[in-house]
Amino acid sequence: MKSAEEIKDFTRFIADYATSLLGSGVHTSRVLRNSNRIATSMGLQIHMTTFQKSIIMTVADADGTQVHTEVLEIPGMPISFEYNSELSSLSWEAFDKHLTLDELRLKYEEIKAMPRMKTWLLVLLVGFANASFCRLFGGDLGAVLIVFLTTMLGFFLRLQMQKRGLNHFIVFTTAAFVTSLTASSALLFDATAEIAVATSVLYLIPGVPLINGVIDILEGHTLIGVSRIIQAFLLVLCIAAGLSLSIFMFQNSLL
Amino acid sequence: MIVEIIMDGLLAAIAGIGFGAISHPPRRAYLYIGILAALGHSLRYFLMHALQVDIAAASFCASIVIGLFTLWFGRITYCPMTVLYIPALLPMVPGMYAYKTVFGLMMFMQHLKDEVMAPKYLMETFSNAVVTVSTVFLLALGATLMIFIFPKRAYSMTRK
Image 1 (cartoon, each protein chain N blue to C red):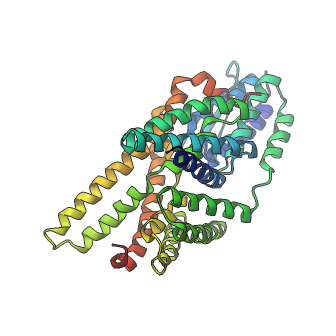
Image 2 (tube, rainbow over the protein chains, first blue to last red):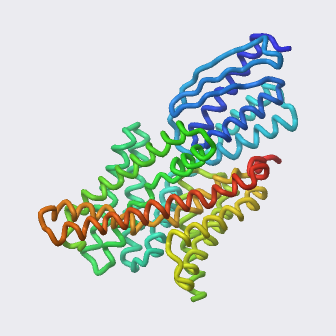
Image 3 (cartoon, chains in turn brown, orange):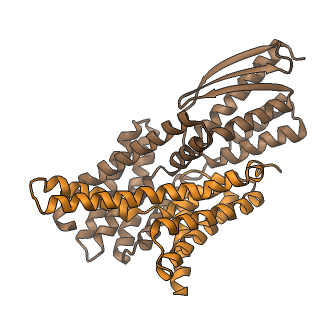
């Protein structure tokens, strides 16, 4: 038997936990399972409805005499697989070791405070990735070099724009335009320009919401799955828009 | 042939790790993301160039193999399956087809009144779009299938 205050306290924690998971790009059923696992370890039950932007959560004790409901907004945050892994592990730890709420909170804050990769290293890695992608598509050395440089420029631009809280669609369109425009400089050199332009924008592809959307739909969370896929599809359209602006300017030389 | 397959795998590993870094995976996952990306992409290369399998079917096979290995690697690294296989699938996105779809659409608009070229560009746009969409869909489906076939294992990867 838990007091109303305890249940309220727990609901606040678990709602925060679930929105963090949803915000960092975890598919719905995993969020539900993780949250349920923690609740079970405390002898409570959870009922949860998730949408793209908010969740509704009701927590009850075992016999259903104490009930508390929270509605929380899902924060817009960058995708983090690290949160996905560590927070999932935390739910198992709670389940296996019956952690108290205070212990849980401490570990949760620890995970949330984990340092992220340095920006310069991230930009460099993405540059290398897109350059080798260009090589996979048969680009020559000139094209690979140009893609390496333009990707770093475009990705850095994207990070800066996102930091300033610019609209997602504008960020993606601008980044795609700038990257493909600078990649068109391959036309000036004796390089496989078409491949350079085509691969330069591929680092923008929203793979995570796309695959999460497919998983959600297949698992019956159709609404949130479809909204994830629509979001991803709109971003792909933005990439195409930015890219076609560059193509428009250089189409005769790209033919 | 063998040298080409190995080169293909190496490049895919770099691509997978780099694209994966955007989603901030835990540090212990990088090595396995690289291995999965290399495995999948070089298998697809082999299927497409040695056995003349089409890009959609070859991607599907590669994606299934990535999913199978993720069942194993996820347990070693305590990572949920999606953390490992989403970055590993990204180097297989059919970028040239996607580009040609956009390019074809642009050219179609430019030649609307040209009776010979307009249908040609429209046809090109459509066939490239079909290849892009079906390949991406099969990529997503192949690896995800393993979650549905082995749910118990897939759902307890992060249990220490």
